[in-house]
Image (cartoon, rainbow, N blue to C red; front, side):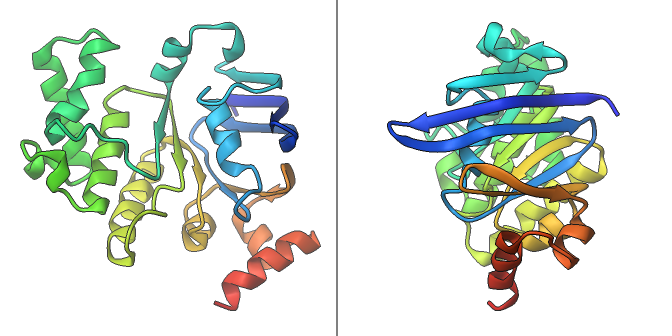
Length: 243
């Protein structure tokens, strides 16, 4: 399968704290990879390095065969979209303006084209009826669906999700997961850092388990969830079973 993302020997420290240690990892086209592990295991830092929101200390990150550390960050971010746990919408803009601004400024699309594409992607996430609403008037789940639509408007080849449901109440978690499942069914390449074990088990094509800055185990969801090899993963999954 065609590799969209390939990470080689990635390392990252903050002061003396080694957060990522020699990470090797790849994502193929159309895969949905869920990254699981305890808080502080390095999951979000790895994701932020893939989008160059954090600069690695060493190692290489290839997207579509190009080492992104040698290239243009803005060009890279056109190819790799990011959805954050805190939505990061512009509060002074309407829903549709949030979906238009990067299209016009970064992709140089006309206003008319940006509006058309924004409506298409808002429809996809069930938010087109709210297009003219101020983003401040939305619920958390609605904001996150708009954030997903905004990322889709950039025609990115890969979507990175950093704990997209962790700031949501239980009622709205499902509406965001449903949108993500729909994208997965349509073949979108996705890397999802998540605490939603049911999503990781049922929607992912592969699951990666991290602990203390390393990838301890990875494989098909069924195999990882039913017969984890490492004690660390057994302990981690035991916490969710016992909740």
